[in-house]
Length: 333
Image (cartoon, rainbow, N blue to C red; front, side, top):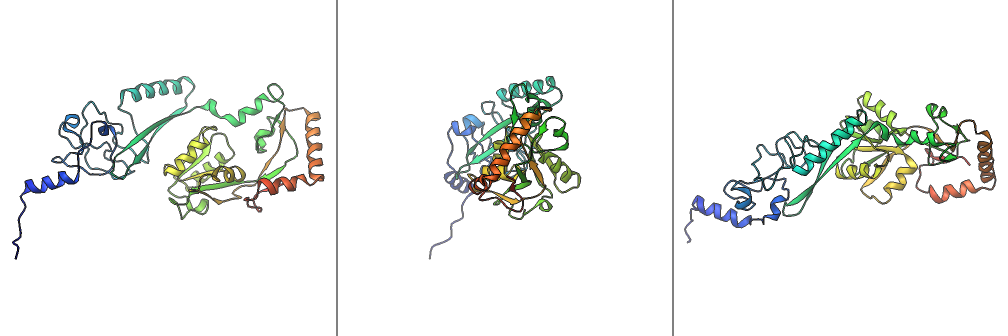
């Protein structure tokens, strides 16, 4: 009968080293978000790490596996995430280039009248727990409230605004509106993998809701926040809707709100995202012309009546709105 063999501590450490091969110096700049190293078995080369087992996620990070105490990096591999990071956002950046870019961004925000700046990090993992981080800084400026600003160009830069514009009491003071051609409302989009229990606005408690700056979804989101139904509202620049949907897929955002026809179209190529609620509001979309331009408004109304008379409105709805909820969205031509 074979006798049991007691392994000395040195043998155990050798076995661990065999199970965790060292990485190259280039891999030292990659991120690991699990505790896969120990002081006696560093995952990175001693030349880079000075014998320390390095990880760049520090106490307080809520993405990945939080670590009680981070070990220091050598100056050759500066840390990129600071203590207190939460939900993918970081307090400050340590890489020299990011310091410069951040300083420039803050200066621009201050110079352009009290905007704000947010920095986020996306961590991508490989099966061996190595990976990399992408750091994104975004500027949110008052001057970037794009949609309402478009009406200022009516009668000078262009004749009509016809890109899914919702009629509101405020916008009635900015333009002359033709007869509505579409009735629709706000819809709610989530990642069905990350938030399978969200089916409507009553299921958003504790989540961050994203909207576009100046969009008619923004006041709806603000009301939900005021009522305690969402944890926060994150406002994206009007031209950054793809960034918002990227954040939704990555889990940095809990839900996104916008008119149903737009979200049906944008989620058609994003299988992980799903429109889970429609008809949150009732809104009417119409063509706008410059205030006082009654002649052009009458021409457009006459053209819309002709389209309706020929049955073309029904044909357009069948072609473009096949996946639309008919109780929430309808063509009025």
